[in-house]
Amino acid sequence: MNNTTKKLGEWAINKIIEEYKDDIALLIALEEHSVNDDGHGECFDYFVPATKRGHELSQTFIVEGIGHDLYPRTWERMERTANLIDKCTICLGNAKILYYRSEEDKERFLKLKELLLKNLNDSEFMYKRVLENLDNAMKLYQTLMFENELYRVRTAAGYIANYLSDIVFYLNKTYFKEWRNGLTAELRKLKYIPDNFEEHYEYIIKAETIDEIKSASYLLIDTSRKFISIHKPDIKSLKADVDYNEFAGWYQELSLTWRRLRFYCNTNNAEQAFMDACSLQNELILVKDEYGIDEDKLDLLGYFNFENLSIIHKRSLELEDYVIEEIEKNGVKINKYDTIDEFLKKNG
Image (tube, rainbow, N blue to C red; front, side, top):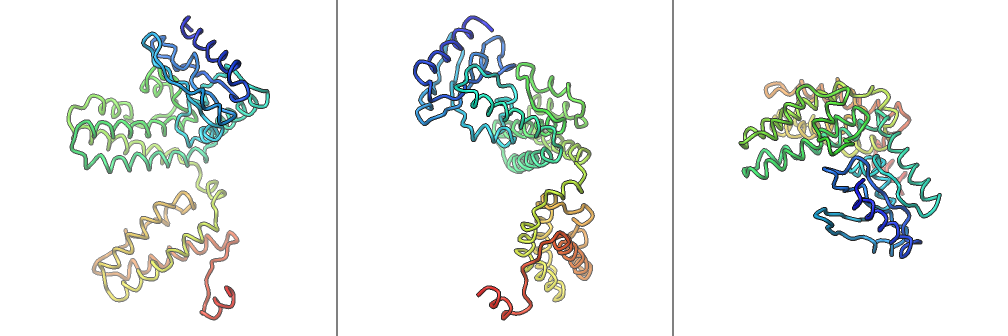
């Protein structure tokens, strides 16, 4: 820690004690965040306000050419960080307490750090975060494919790489900790890494054309998806967390689509049958992991045959029966009635 960093840290602590003693719960610094000995994050990074007035401590300034941002992170945001919803994991994982208002505030913060560590080591919990990051990366890729400006393509590719690298860290039960070393150096420390991930990432940085960047982004997503599949937790244990009431609600909402698909099959309307099958297939893919749907029960559209709709008709019955069975064998009754009179009697 250089002399300027030390003096800034002392200034922030003294300012809190003299002007905001009852309004600031914590002042936090970040370890391993300084680059080129600039002291950024080490003198202070953020504070946790205890009152509305505490937010007034926030300010940005430049000292000796180094920008500093003394900003608030609320307890609610810290909880989101511990649960890896807020992406700045380093803000909690690398946090060092410089000042605390009370032992209670200190203990509350340390418990959030413990929760972060617990979550990082929970394979099932982290797998959900992994899927969220993959979904974000693939949505960005869809946007990237329609961009024609080099700067926009590079921006999207950079964020795709960011989401996917987080996936790699998460599946190694850790996070990107040391900014001063750079992403590639940190990836090399990990036990598990997707095939050619580093090469594809570097290709994005070195690429000079839009087509090269799009190609590299695709390859990075492709190898990450394969990596996720290899490191997926046992689906049986994932099923323990399924909310079968939500699963039933999902089925009830889509039950008409199942019925309509078979109607179009029976009337030999291949176009409409295809569209409803697409809708159902997309839903099955989206909720597969949330509701623990077995991999071999995922394929519907693979059975579509324009000349013979009876094949997908049969498959739709098999899949719908499977969904119903999964819901009912876990103690949830599907909200259905054989007659309108039965419905009216039950629902007043």
